[in-house]
Amino acid sequence: MPVLIYPKSPEHHLFARGGIESTRAGRDTHLDCVNIGLINNMPDSALIPTERQLFDLLGAAAGKLVIKLHLYTMDSTPRTDWGRDYMRRFYRGVDGLFDSRLDGIIVTGAEPKTDRLPEEPYWAAFVQVIDWAKENTFSSVCSCLAVHGAVLHLDGIERHPLPDKCIGVFNQTRTTHHPLLLGVQERLRIPHSRWNEVREDDLAQSGYSILTKSDSAGVDCFVKQHQRSLFVCFQGHPEYEAQSLLGEYRRDIGRFLRRENESYPTMPQGYFSRVSEEALVAFQHEALLSRRPEFLASFPADRLAQDLRNTWHAAAKCIYRNWILYLSSHKARQSRLLAAGGFV
Image (cartoon, one colour):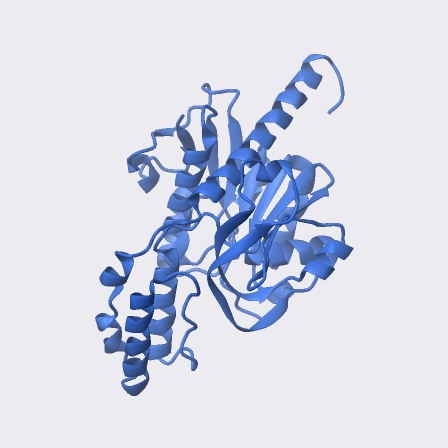
């Protein structure tokens, strides 16, 4: 079934996506669909890839259900002129979110700008979104930095900085039987890309159920009911495409070569083939000797991409399928109660 999108303009790139039917949503169609809001806080360079990744994943997971995807932004998120123009053309502000009736939301991470989350320029708006979601959605998905912000605001759980960036595709173990993991294998792989973490002991003490975790990357997926909404948290990125980490690694190398960062970036773990890793070690050696922005042009991105495979898509599709079914079932239950004159 199609994923229907609600951007402010019909010129949005998702209308041209192949493989999944994308249709401009009409207000008089598909009244029984599942309405999902995407609050996209990713940096400008990742805005379009994030839209595409989540659009494709929702489309693959939806089955016979119809999804309406509504695009929202927090105006206080730092952006370039291009980014502000893009959001103005295609996104609605969170004031529109607060006036909406959605079944669920997806809140993406953002690139951290400060050591303390409450000092981030968008913190006040982010807190408003989380508080609204508690009372007005059946479930809320948060990923990466949005997870760290949500658990800090909701439960006072602090994130902890990591000695090196956690980046790669990590083996995860399913730790419990939960409806969100129905059909998911006991062992799965999920990409991660972050500088901080929230820890299992802190989460468990605050009543979160840990669903998946890794010996190398720590907790990945965990959940907790907050008022009306089930908060589903991913420290990783199940929505990533096969080449997403490659693009991030190349970006970070570019920042090193431009002397924006002083440390050469950590190579993603469990992601590249042995031959690719050897080529990247050789590239690093040359980059350290010749630290010039122009050297990035010799980064062998096309050759590296040929060996990359999305080994986590099946698990990600299954988890999101279960999440969509959770939204659909709770929406149907609410409709039955309302039809019977009951209270929701």
